[in-house]
Length: 254
Image (cartoon, rainbow, N blue to C red; front, top):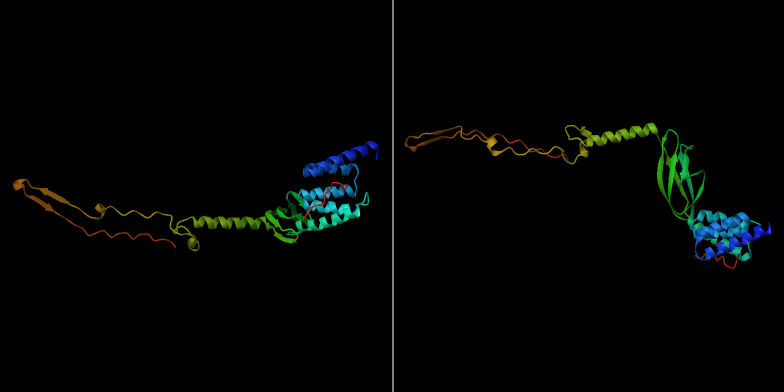
């Protein structure tokens, strides 16, 4: 490394440590990445892993911390090595292995927008899983991962033809349930809580009785003759019924 490159490296590291001390972890990570590109080593892996931990990127932190233990360039001191081992143990509580088995087995799996294959290690919390295959109805599912607990999922995709038939069956049942009992199939009647047809109003009283059919007024003697004709009461129609830990400090240990 040239003297200019070495000076750049030291300056970037110093700025990264300042941002880390101020808890500006996103800025610190960006600067540690630059330092790692200039001069990769176990020390830069260590700083990246510890900053990822603070950013709660536990899967990434796990990979970076393991790299810090194995990289032979500028190896860690015994104290640093012990700290990283302790931190890795803590990280393991915040990640979990995830296995997704699909039918058909050729289906593609996308986790949080990224294609994945085989056994995965994921951060704890909620994730979005999308599984698709040609000729099958895709599945979109929310997955809740608990730290340290392996999770295995079985995803069976439904062929498009069967899916369409199933959808048509549900649609027909919903339509039948929306019809009055006279129009709905007998087996669908139990979906109804009451008829949708409003009950008819009672007929007016004057329509159920016959009134005077003849009224004669005789002027002579102011005698009024009244003839009242009555008829039988018309039968009333029945009412319709109802159907029933502490992160090691970076400062001073670079």
